[in-house]
Structures are given as structure tokens and as C-alpha cells.
Length: 122
Image 1 (cartoon, rainbow, N blue to C red):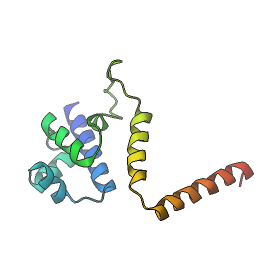
Image 2 (cartoon, one colour):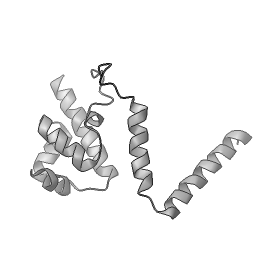
Image 3 (tube, rainbow, N blue to C red):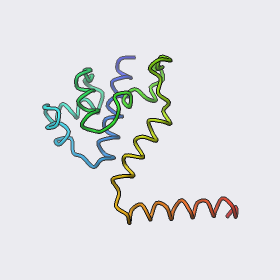
């Protein structure tokens, strides 16, 4: 189970790093490790300590719980539970706010086209 969890954490790290267009070296520098260590994290060879998860979450601009989402054995307690839809909305809202007006207009156009296709059934 530990190996699966390490691979899960590594996968989430890699996915977010690539989504932001960051290199392993850039992430490594941000949390003061070698790029080889980031490679090991991403492959699941090495586990990621709680301190490193916190540093990665801060640098990658995601909540710490991001790394645990979608892991089958993870269940948030009722008091700490944050709906994943809320986390995704928060992430998308932050991302959207950083887009240029032109990029936002293109997204709106895609959404309008999608709505038109749904109505016409084409």
C-alpha cells in the first residue's frame, strides 16, 4: 500500500508540475532538493515527507489535500472534509483570473459553441 501511495503522490506532483510548465529542476530549487529527488518522488521510488508536501503545495499553489485527492484509501473526516468540487473550483478560479482577456474570450467562445452544440444535438 505504501508503494501505491508514493506513486500516487508522485503522479499528482508530476501532473501539477507539467500543468504549470515547470521543470523538475525549478521545483527542486524551490524546495531545496536535487532534481534527481524530484524524479524519485514522481516515480514513487521515494516517499514525500509531510514538510515536503507542504512546501510543494505552497510552491505549486494547491492545497495540501490536492496530493491526497483521488487516492482510494483516503477519506476526509467530516470536520475536515472539503468537497473536491470546491477545490477544483478554487483552482480554476485562480487560474482563470491569471489569464489574459484574449485567453478568457477564447474560453468563453468554446463554452458558447458547446452550449449551441448541446441545444442542436449536432
